[in-house]
Image (cartoon, rainbow, N blue to C red; front, side, top):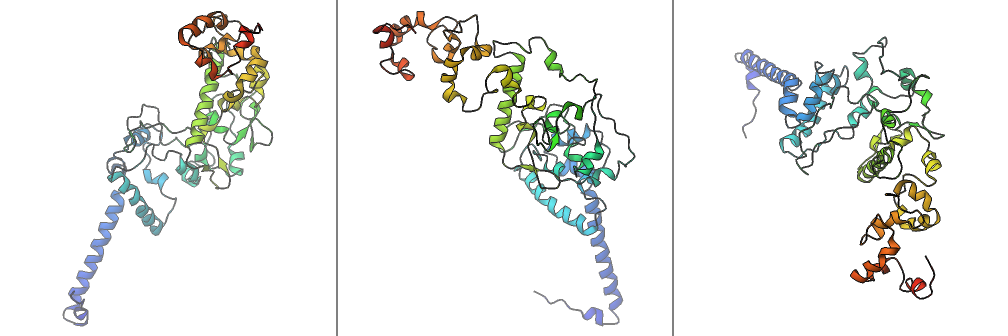
Length: 381
């Protein structure tokens, strides 16, 4: 390797030329760096370069009220110095690599981690303290209380700059699964990451905490015909409760890491883990009406037979169909006696079923002497 000589700087005849070329090289490098930093900070680069393969995110940005705001205004610390700016750019190269190699995951920032970590200064650099807030009709939001509790803006307003009011089109390059929408922290369910109907909650969950006295507290779905029906899986409130329970269970089972609040001190439960009915009703509300734990806990099936025999009327409230007799527990037939007609009493038809298919299936639940109690001893079930 040739040695770098400083003789040119020592030679009075050549020194001016060396100085000129050195200054030109430094200026040229500075211009390249400045232009590169400027170009990579534009909406064009973010949308058509870095995030081109994540078009759902760009479309959401274009649909938002912040579509004319620079990406860097939110994604770069306020009043950051050149060193912070360069470090941020260097960190972003890792994401550019994931994009270039098609190894990123969807949804992008799926747990809204950026929103949970973003400082309020990102918002207040544009939204001043004298700004008039315009919450939805029937909603009372005390921003000062939240600020005093160190609740940053984007802990609630996470989708302001990326509004997903359209059908997502992308699929995860690794799993092939359809991209899903992010949780919107502005929904009532998301409020109950902190608020609670139970005593000792982090924040109060009573209706008057967020709604004026004349506000209609019942959601629109509660006013639809058949919402309170009993006797079928399609009943409105039952389907809603089951869907919320199942979604919460699925989210809990698949959650890789817990989201934390802006201070990083306390975990915030992901909105999909929140039981929808519990946002208005205390835990005992469903049980007070149904007479049994509702929705049923995950291990309920293991011992539900004893409950069904002791309180068949409670089960019939939801599961009895077609006028089936509660005494005979015929509403259990669809699971326990699928060989027959589940809409009819089981005892009169079990003779034919046993003659046609044999009695082996009976002994999945009954011991071998069970049949003898009726057929030999004559005890009527």
